[in-house]
Image (tube, rainbow, N blue to C red; front, top):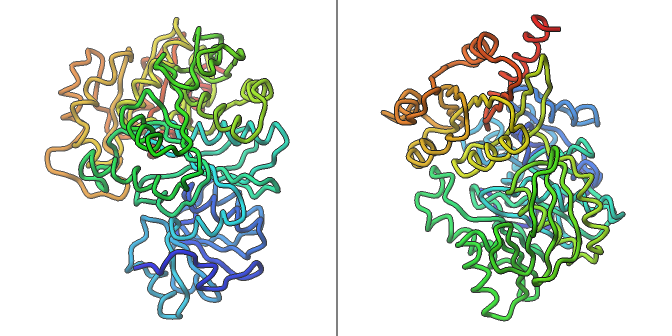
Length: 472
């Protein structure tokens, strides 16, 4: 087990000392590593493979080792490990044998944010984009926030930074109760919907975890919750009943403090009128598509208002927000075929992303490559998955990306395709199979939407490279 919270107090690790990260290539740990690097700590890390995140850290002076060896922790004053790293990992065992404190990321986040006003964005869907929108607004209005995002902010090219301003914006991940380690002054809940069944066995278990997250929000702290989500609205009502500061927002015309009026698709993005307590107050324009992103923008505007940003300045900043990596990210276009990469791997996120694709590319054939993510999620949400792809013209389903899991009997992509009842769905097990089908069958105008939280984005890259050779 990991030691108690507040490692900087118990371990007395100061800037200039050495912190080693096990699993540094993930978004969560790479972000923490970057913030601590900028705070003056000596950082090293190990992971199974190189990635753009590890390469970026290496360019900034972080020692990155590929693979895992006991020797990598030698000389470290503190070790931080990802949730996927077990107690019997060789580097964990080596650190403990050397009496080096070992922590999970949840154990250190409060200490990292100490001295700054935390803004924590939680929710099953939309938290990465909402966190990025808030960060972008604060940067563009000169507030230089610190931030940790579960994706790369396109305007900075980074997923984290340590700023000089008073605010620390963080994506609050519910998995492994990570967000229980946070002590924010502002909490955002974008929605609550059952996910991560490998960790939360029931929807109630997930809801209770969100409720426990809010237990760490002080009575004078502000909760901003989406009224479109029944469970988020329930938590907001409970907090409001205790006379604690609470605001709600809605992108679906639900009665709320912040609303979106006259919502329209406009070019690559959206336009809408911002409503504040029933009154129109500003016209907002987004460069990214989707009704779900209108709701995300309202949450960001509510936070910006709490931070003292004028609404006019906030909507002007939002108009330049270009999104985050792997959230409806256009990867390229060749011969009239556009490739879009998206992280959607939950039925609700899939539906929202497909609707956004339809709105942005109304006259294009929509080819979807879906890589189901984890056996437990596929099994638990099976019935919802089979009804999520109605907006796709063609659907290629790869084998399930296992991540940290072992296969489950009877849970596979063949069963999914058989249950889909989609006339143009097929099982294409491997990445190479998908690329071959796309090269042979896709004709312009078309959009290829890669939906994956695993390694399927390589399919889009391979298609673009090979199609360019055929149709330069």
